Image 1 (tube, rainbow, N blue to C red):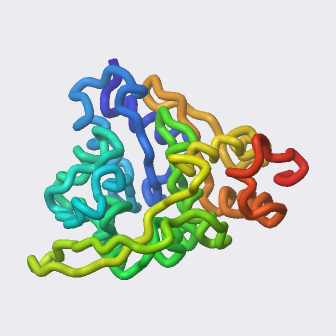
Image 2 (image 1 turned 135 degrees about the vertical axis):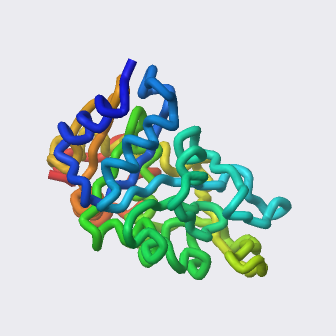
Amino acid sequence: MYTKEMLKKQLEEMGLQGTDTLFVHSSMKAIGEVAGGADTVIDAWMEYFKEGLLLLPTHTWKQMSESYNVFHPETEPACVGLLPNVFRRREGVVRSLHPTHSVAAYGKDALEYIGGEELLPTPCHPDGVMGRLLSRNAKILLVGVTHIRNTFIHAVEEMYEVPERFTEKPVDFEVVMPDGSYRKVPMYRHYNRHTAHISESYDKMLEGYFETGVTKKYKFGDAECILCDAKGIYEVTGRVLKKERNCFIDRETIPREWYL
């Protein structure tokens, strides 16, 4: 059984600094038995990155729709697992106002970092939370999951204007603002006619990212982890998309010479 100190030691062994910006996608089940459960995992992350910026997805794309279109940031549960839902309720954690792809943040400039998400028209806009990972030289930690859950690759595709990624028209959501007022937020949804989930194609780059050195394998608890350099992911993915912008969907495999 893992303790908080054991988990913090594993973060240190990854080479992570307490002042880093870290975005975490996670599976509590993959981490295994932890004394104190999910709360201890969140304690370890928040204590380790108290001088940095800790980010977890609190996405709601699964339940938000044309008929269920009012987003309450304070109460709406995330559809991406246990740990984000524990994290978003912690004291000092703030949540962005994006109706489908909100992010919870903890750190010295957390509120500033997540600001303005309700003003953007797409799920992972380059000017939003995901795009800002580049300017922070951020790391992305995939804990017990792979790039199928790596939301940042959606952002890279937006940066490169990959076609066939959104619905034809936006959905009119309403976001409950901090002062209790309601703001209308038109938002395009992820959509491709060939696949129900675009991100399921991202593991085609799994070995490519390892081979180019922009990702490395580690352990957190029992979980197999992938530590990603956001800037490196952007550069290697861009190299591939410049060859063929829709290759993640259109090709079964990505040619090795495209990313080397």
